[in-house]
Image 1 (tube, rainbow, N blue to C red):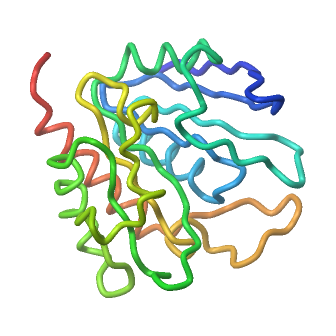
Image 2: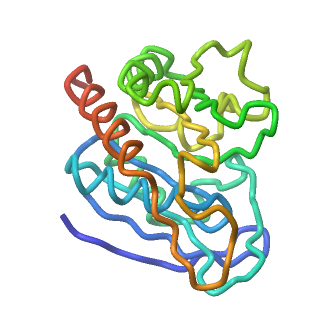
Length: 204
């Protein structure tokens, strides 16, 4: 496995993209500085499973800018193009702060079979967290179905996993210089989900 990094500018925002190469299963964190814990989860799960990971962060920025996923276009970033050409199936990790559903893990993205497979492994987190795959129960903005969303641009599409704060980090409020530490139970369940996807992936 090799790791490469590059700075890119999207809509005037400077981001650091870091790609670690592995298998054809990819972990993606587009908003690693905005949605605490997603970068750490992507790296941890990818390392455990031998998967590829691509993480975007805004190092040293106290108030990171959130760029909607569909606008993080391929043309902005060589490493994103490399990720999409290497990876067949993507698991894209995001964070939500929906007060009405503080325990819901929402599984969107265009590959609905893959979403159900991942949800099957996340069932181990009940009753602390509640995996949801029914798109009618997922807010439109969190469904991850846009055709330009990177989660849907790999050959077999992917799963967008929207995690509540408690599933992403053991830190309950932001503080400068304090790292995010995802719960071990969530790392374990997501890793099993990635393993189940890898085992089920069809050949190209």
